View 1 (spheres, rainbow, N blue to C red):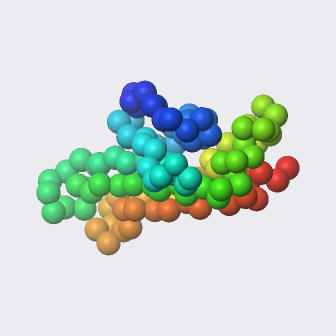
View 2 (view 1 turned 135 degrees about the vertical axis):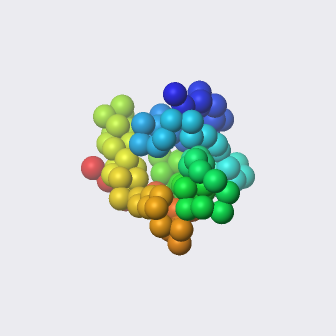
Amino acid sequence: MMRAIHLRHAVLYDIANCLVDLFPSGADIAEIGGDPTPALFVSWRTGGVANHAGNIAWGVHYRFDARVLRDYPNLSNDARERVCQRVRELSRYLDFNYADPRASSLLVVDVEEDVLDA
């Protein structure tokens, strides 16, 4: 089971709860960045022996457009759910190729203001 999510920023908290099931159990979700531009960072480590493809630290950095952080709290519950589902869609296309030693283990998801559009 994932750790409890403890984030200060209410928008990041909502989004993190919407995404939690997309990542391996045991992944950590943290709020990073300064107050004007907070971001989410999800991280975990795959098992294996050091210096082998299976022993890799993985991370996803969610960067949010300032308008998303500003406008989300004013949305209806249905609109908030739509935003969460759009961020989930962005996350579904992440490629974690655990078998490839050259795979990128740090991925970035830019959450642009268009996720607010109906």
